[in-house]
Amino acid sequence: MAEKILNRLSLSAVTLAVALACVPEPGHAQAQNFQMRLDRAIVYTPLYPGGFADTVPPYSMCRYNGDGNSGMALRFRYTWNNTFQEYIYTEPGSTFYPYYYMQGVNPNPALVPATSGFGPVYKDVDVGLLTGPVNTLGVHTLTFRGRTSGFFGQPVMTASLPVQIETLFEPYPTVYREVPDGSLDMPTRPWFAWSQSGTPESVRFDVAPCSNVAATNNSECTSSMPFAPTTTACGSSLYCSSGTANILQLPITLARNTAYEYRVIGRNICGLSDELASTPSRPFFRTAQACFTNGGFIPDGGTVNFDFATASQFPNSLAPNLRVTVHANHAQVSDLRISLTKTFPDAAGPLLLLDRPTGANCSGPRIQAVFRDGAISAVSACRNQEPAIGGAISPVQSLASFAPIQGGGNWRLTVEDTNANGKAGSLLEWCLSTNNEVPIFPAAFIDPIIWGNGFETVSP
Image (cartoon, rainbow, N blue to C red; front, side):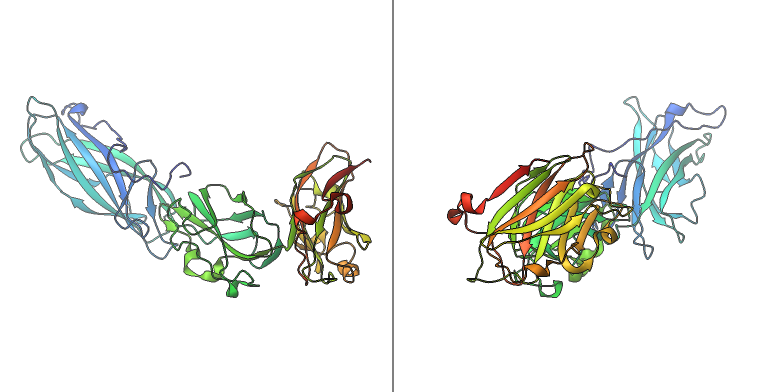
């Protein structure tokens, strides 16, 4: 199913012909005089109530999460090369029950006239098919048979055709692995990850700002994402994409200190996953207040300082409830030691945020974490998937010591790779947030000598 795509809507030139030689009874007409093929399969679903042409076997049939089913129409084409007329009955060539029901054959029988000297006669027959009462998920091979009547004193001939039917559910709701609902202080170019069951052929990703950009939870957020994302057009979404991957690093930069919703809709021929039915199923997140993005290199076995300046919105405002967002790519995060320092105009730190976590699943790649007091330890947060460390993490040393420090000024994040093992990395983004907003200092007012807006590598 993975190679099937949702825009297979042509009912004409792309039809698949499955030709099968007849199986005449001994001494009867030659096989090429009576042939049977499947011209196309049409599946009817809520997503495609007018029918959808499926031309690639196994042909898709839908069963809606076990509580209903949809119909399918199979169009068979008979090729008749005999000099006499006949009735052809279309019938099961194998037992369909309890998985499927064959019904609605039209015409049955089909009368084919004798051929003249101008080539064969073609006759189309439509066959309806429904799923049966048991769980039919998976691929089943059904045999259909065309059988002549012998009413006109001619021998009975048969032609058989195996047809592969794959019964599917529409995709189940998305399981959001990252960024989960309610995430705060996210980087402005976060990495999203999710999982889905129910055989999605593709997914559509959308992200949009909340109409209330100051929203602090999902109930306060109303976005303008398109209700029925069945196309590849973004519409009112800030960013959208379609594909088969289950991870996405946002290629655009979001506004800082802003509330957003995002959504991942699984799609297959049978329909959409049901995130559309409930607004709370669209995860809410907020970006951090002051972010510095540089893609700075983290040398293998070395140390690097990342500096940037912030300006306080209010004169002499402090930094209560300080949070530090770190988004880094590194092949082995258990090699890393990360600390924070306030360098100007007042000084504090360095304060240790992360120190070579040693949990069983801490050796994987990438960090997308928010360090804040009262969260879980980095070791507890380690997981056997990417990112190895994600979510809200408690720093090694409490950030409360920064509470009396001015929010505005020059801050430094120091990243040390403690193990020279050929595994380097990069800092994608780091951010600061407090109960008093700490926006980035306007570039026009930064004195690079005083504020040191950039990064430097420290000799080992």
